Length: 287
Length: 88
Image (cartoon, rainbow over all chains, first blue to last red; front, side):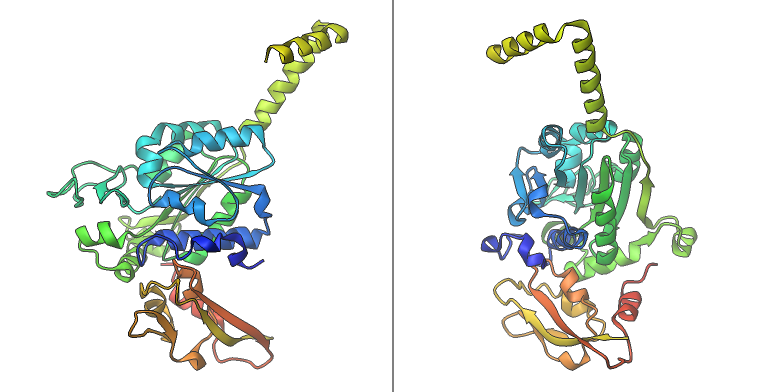
């Protein structure tokens, strides 16, 4: 299938600003899904609120545009009731780590089979350029005209500490790497986090004098380096890219199934089958 | 080995927002913005079908249509990708 078969063409051109990195992330994600040959009816995308969250409207998968920061909570519900579906959860930096911070760490802790994509443009773009938990100190925002003093989260370290079993980082400049990482993350069984550094030329770029989309992409190229590369060894201030963690760990839905089977078996052993049937009927009636 | 040969650049002018990303990062300077700030392929004969424009386009507005050719090109699309997306 061509990537155009995976989008709702009637909503294009998309609403993001010219040069917004979120479009490139959508592009990379569609290619990853296409290269994996996934059926679009087997994918559910849930998103929260913000520029990034609008992505769920453009893809022709099952989609849920939900509450601010709660995309992972909705995704958890969908995954537990229909574990055969693939869950993709793209979130903005504020959506995932400010208001949705608790949902994020607990989804990672449970290691539920969901792919979380953090579209990190380091600002709240939709509401006018307020600083986010990923802006970092010394940055200008509409709520920080004299620069921010807050430290930022390191998404990679945070996800590893919270228990995610696949953690990676890439940028919108390194789009081929992005597609590869997204493919691995989607195939991974367990909670996978992919942080993609994105550009917001309208707010972040303009306020911090980082120039237009092209200059911001050049900046991403200059300030990041692949894990294990010479460049990173020589200059540890560069932001590392690549796959940081990829481990096999017990997955939440499978563990839940095991517990359910054990509980059902024990109930069957304790009570004769006839009574169990009656009880089941009673519970049904009550429900 | 068969090389990819360009058929055409399929550009959706309604979707293009003229962000200049494809123009700037094209390794062979094939693309330019016109007076309406929409992308056009001005030197299609130089295109090496690396598809970096198509991959990076935030608006899904450009597509590189290719056909298989048995002629050996001087540089391959893989070379271009390696040089322009440096893993530094």
